[in-house]
Image 1 (spheres, rainbow, N blue to C red):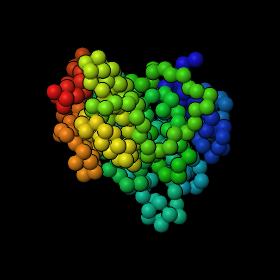
Image 2: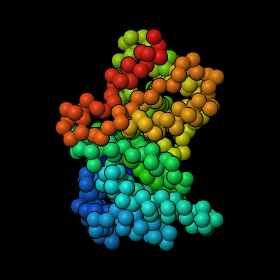
Image 3: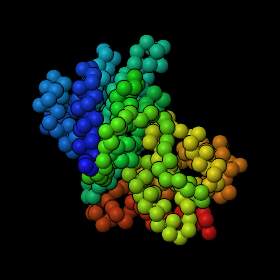
Image 4: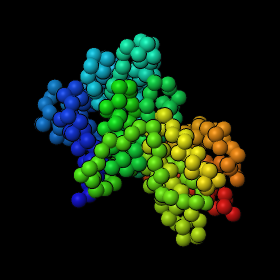
Length: 322
């Protein structure tokens, strides 16, 4: 039986709360399910002390969670929309990410910040951004961006069991995606990319919802005789450069695709790292596919016209292989 991203994430939360009594949920309306219903019903099973609604203050939520983590709990806080993580950056960047280093390893902040990113149809400029590159710049933060429900299940479990703060970014367009969760599904190690599709002509590196788009592009290009390998980064910080270099050594051509604005995006960091680690393996310049330097429009038609998609990836691959 296939279930949605939301339902599989709810199952992961429920299982981890059952397994570990130190896990608890906090955020705006999480007892009612949160912004997208992921935590719906958990308060009935685990009680109001472990599923706690908070005031509408991202700074307060993050500060409370950081203090609780320092005292031995494992909080999962929801910040509805990564756009609002800007209001929590002081604590998250200047405190949560720094405690282990500044205490000489005596303190840790084992918490997961669940947040939603990406455009999903008419949410406009303040609710549709992909700001992950802001956070991969911060030593001490782990940044995870799952590409599917089953991936989210395994990556979330590993994130919650880590003794460091994790920003867990869920793309809103993936929430309706359905997959079968195997009975033996387990935690997925952080910091390791996966080969989502084997190929020999070009490597397309993507993450989050763009992995699905890259796979669609690879399928289209296969009909033209072009073999595309698709790599799902999974974890944006730390990056698994070894897996990327292995793929590039095989295909010798690279396209990096993400929904975030191309300027200063994760793709720029990946390209720089590959340029240093695999320059001699490349037969062509590294190409990037990203959003143009503009806010996300409110009108769905304009949003669709702005966002990068399958055709942009196909065009980049054709340019590399022509």
